[in-house]
Image 1: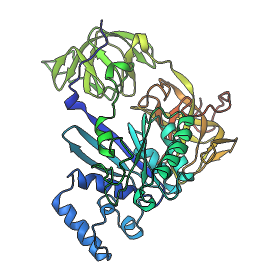
Image 2: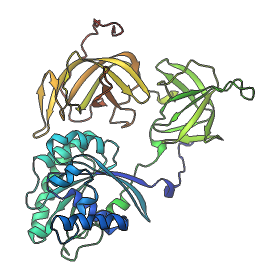
Image 3: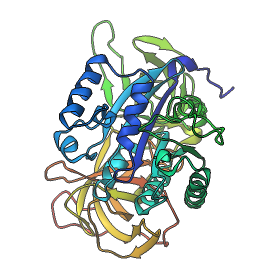
Image 4: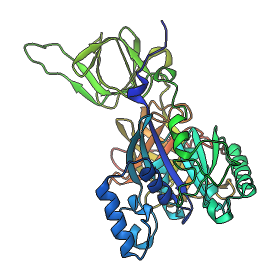
Length: 448
């Protein structure tokens, strides 16, 4: 049977991308210029920006105000939170995440870039590649963002000089390539003046590449849903038990990756029981094939004990299950994560109790060195952890699947999200650390 699935490209051409850069590199101005010049700004929004700019003594509209929506952001002239913007051109639809540049908001960039297929990293042409530039490149590599754009901004302040651009592009490309970033595109721009953002610059005839928008419109997206193994986390069990449907049992959820077909042999994890897909319903209509990210109801040929959190996968490509999780994590909570801490681990629709067995290393993003055995991870820290779960989980390696290879660690006392995790080796190979043997916890219900 062919693995090819035909999908209407016009209906699915959606690019999620994130912007990142150091403070005052002009990220928000770039985003504002992109929205303004692509005619994606409503008239009343533009009028509000013009009024706010005049109130600050600026003659021209400050396009950065189109994205800096928090009062503290406008007052300080910085980006604090992730700002999401939606816009479209005749060629493609976009979801943009404008992320902060400050070191203390690294966790916000992780949030914005976690679902991005492309990251735009800005560099001030006067300052070149700085520590925060390397930090953002490393985060993009950690999160397996497939495309990275280096936007060398403020070219107007260096007289649009080609050597200044070339030196920065060479340094960044070499560094990002060493991290394993698969594709890097460098574009010289002036967000303030609009050079090479939406329209080609008249000041840089030495540059023959695309503008930022042209690249966003033409960058190749994920090849297709059939390239990944099928993964279907069960979100809800449907049993109407009505006279019309006395024996109906369906499993509803969103396909995380790959393709499901009627007749496919499947395995239910973590139980390991097997069956065959008998029917697939999409919006109440029976179909023969469904693919990510469609929301569907799957019916199986056998009456199995399946509940929320179980994973249905084609038997030929079903993942292994384990209670020992080794992962790279970014700690996002203000309270530290410590060895021996009891947490909840949320993977797709499944949440289980877990114990932090070890923190083998903390990554120093400045020089990519590993700080061994830190004992704990503070806010914005990235490091390696070993977690023991109370029940088996069917995790893929994050390098193979960003959706089913990721998880969250949650504080069981108040539900606070502590950590975003990437199963397996998501970055430079850390020192081999064997999982510590499981020990019984003192609290009732944590004995695993």
